[in-house]
Length: 133
Image 1 (cartoon, rainbow, N blue to C red):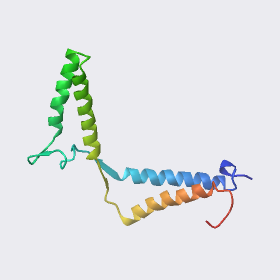
Image 2: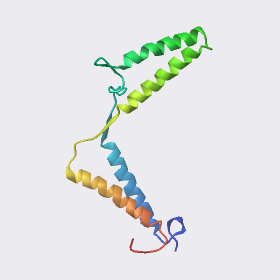
Image 3: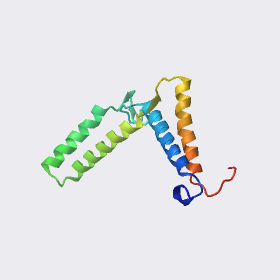
Image 4: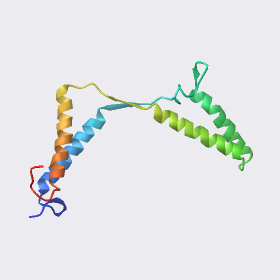
């Protein structure tokens, strides 16, 4: 009897591995804290000890939006608006940080065994032959 994907691996191994991977991935992602901030690389945009803040970026944005509402064909207005939007998005993405929540070693090992063990079962169900590796 053929297994998952027409290979010799088992359908049971496929679904058990898939469920284990999903559970481990969910638990891992559930325990990661994401925090956001704003920063545009203070080393690059540092003027006399004062970095660029999101409020400083909003002034050219408001000016650009005002120019667009005054004259929708204003190249300067569109340029200012798009450039400041890119700066805001880049600033938030650059300052995104990920932290793993505090957990016991048992919880972390359980998550990793579910994730990596499930991946191993899932991949073993897709192989063509029963080799050692």
